[in-house]
Amino acid sequence: MTISAHFAEALTRAAVETSPYRHWLLDGALPEDTCAELAGLPIAPTIFGDTAGRRETNNGLRVHATPATFAAHPVLKNVAEMLQEGPAVDAIESICGISLAGTSLRVEYCRDTEGFWLEPHTDIGVKRFTMLIYLSDGPGSEAWGTDVLDGPDRFVRSAPYHRNGGLIFVPAADTWHGFRRRPIDGVRKSLMVNYVGSEWRSRHELAFPDRPVGRAS
Image 1 (cartoon, rainbow, N blue to C red):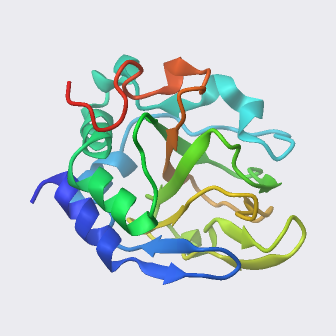
Image 2: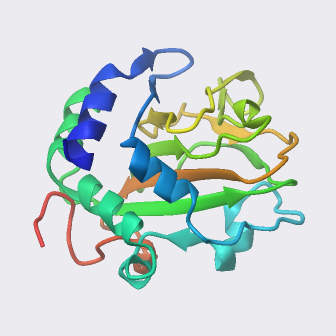
Image 3: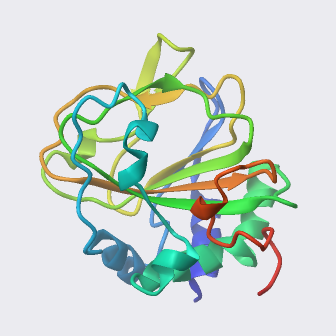
């Protein structure tokens, strides 16, 4: 089974939650060998001071799946290619009820350490789809799931964090989420996947800057 077909099958099995907004909880999102390879990438963790609750505070340390990183980390290219076209894209459009036509793929490899937190927020409108695939499995990692909120101030639950699990939602005005301050003993690794509209300005962050989703190379 291809990586793309594996992901598509995992998405069909994902649990669907409707409160406080519709979101999906993944299990076994990627083939185990792919997940293990991602978790073991020799990329230094991000060391945080005061981030003000925003990833942008450390923009210079962020790592994306791009033509510039594909040679050093082929697994990032493999995952990007599976999310660019084929069964994975078809499954996302069908199950999540969205069209990805004309969007571009953005994949970030996140390595969060002690002190990391994210203020409650909704994703900006240019993001048409958001997915987190969790990669770590160390002691205490079960408490590292993304926080789901009903508005900016009402915590509802944390998404289950386990290796090769994940969280999906379609960004909207009510899709509040974040990460409350809590201990991170180790490195909280995850893939953050977005499909973004053509107005996305940071083209250097895109997996295939000149190829809209669904277009073959």
